[in-house]
Length: 258
Image 1 (spheres, rainbow, N blue to C red):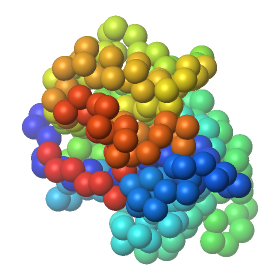
Image 2: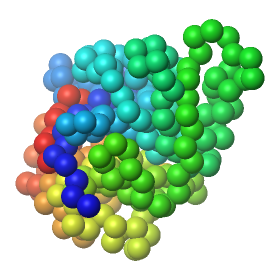
Image 3: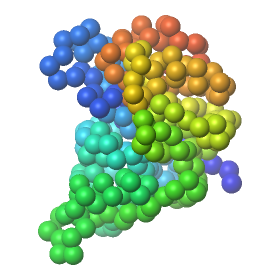
Image 4: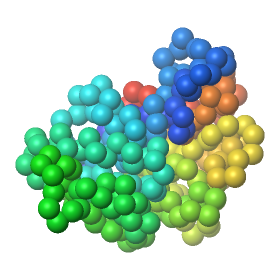
């Protein structure tokens, strides 16, 4: 099935603390460059008829407001960590506009966390105005959201299974430090790859800058953007000067068309 033209909007490109980090006066946190200001990581994917978001960060409300997003067909979750799902309560506004529940696509581990953390949305007798959610459990089987075919890609965040997603020629992977060979094969042929690159130093559950570069080169994707960036990595412009020409740091507000 052919994927329709899509637009990708980077809503946030920072790690769990965001940049600037509370109380930090490092060079990156004090930078005046807007590209060094990073909300928590999330992307919006739009075709002519379908709009979906990958993860609802603690910054979800602000991300929707600053992009003037008034409609979502679905939320796709990568995993249940708070920096990727804590903003879900603010889906209420979109429930009000559409008069229907929001479709939430998540693996069983993330679904369990949604039911636990937002328990009030699942009570038999609900308080008026709570989020209306339609949970759809996914595995590695491709699924459709409107006219968009979504292929889950299984990666690992230390020992936690996390889903990346491939939509047509666009692949988005965050919070990973291991990708098995058969899942790497699912990424090959993408025109654009987004991959996490936390910092230079080794980390227990995230790719380093060097590791992310190596994977990008191995996969031979022609256009690569790094996300889930820590203030420890360095200034946006400085890091970009070190990277191969086809690899760049993503930044909040970046838009791509495929």
